[in-house]
Amino acid sequence: MRHAPAYGLLAAGLGLAACGPIPVEQAERQCYAQFAPKPPISGEAGMGVTNDGFRSNLKVELNVGAYVQGDPSAAYDSCVYRKSGRMPTRPLYSY
Image (tube, rainbow, N blue to C red; front, side, top):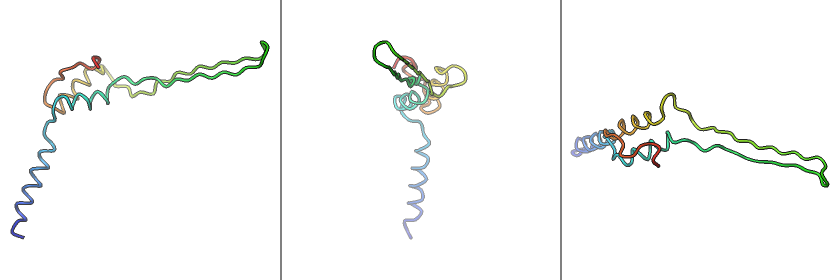
């Protein structure tokens, strides 16, 4: 049990290190995934009968992306700053 205090200090140091800032590039990737515009889900269907008989067509486009209240670019900037302690080197819409 002589090493127990040393292990405790090591665990505390690792725990505090996990709370520290991350590199700005890593923060940009994480925040981009969170605030990037989501592509819509879309599809098309069709039915028909021969010789100009019954025909039908359906086209659906649905955007189920998460919406941010306010400016997504400002939310991205704030997220990067909160995670890294620095402003982003690339704006949200430059990806």
